[in-house]
Length: 61
Image (cartoon, rainbow, N blue to C red; front, side, top):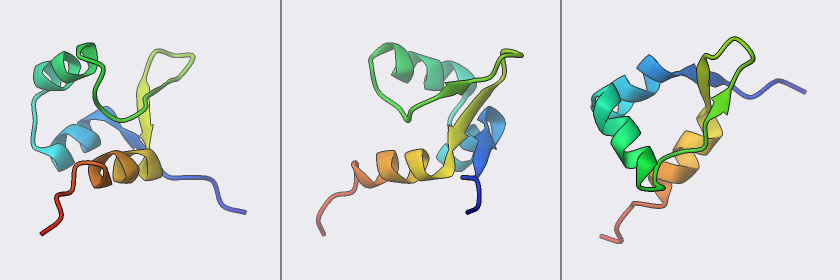
C-alpha cells in the first residue's frame, strides 16, 4: 500500500494562488485544509485532504 502524497506549504500556496499570509488568515477563521505539523516544525498537507477541501467549495453548475 502506498503512502499518501504529502505537499509542502509552498506547493499548496502555489496551487491555491494565495500568499502565505492570506493562507494563515484563512486558517485563523477556521477554514482551509487539514495541516500536519512535523516534529521539525515543517507543515505538510495530504493531497487527498486538499482535494476534499477544494471539492467542498465547488458550486453546482
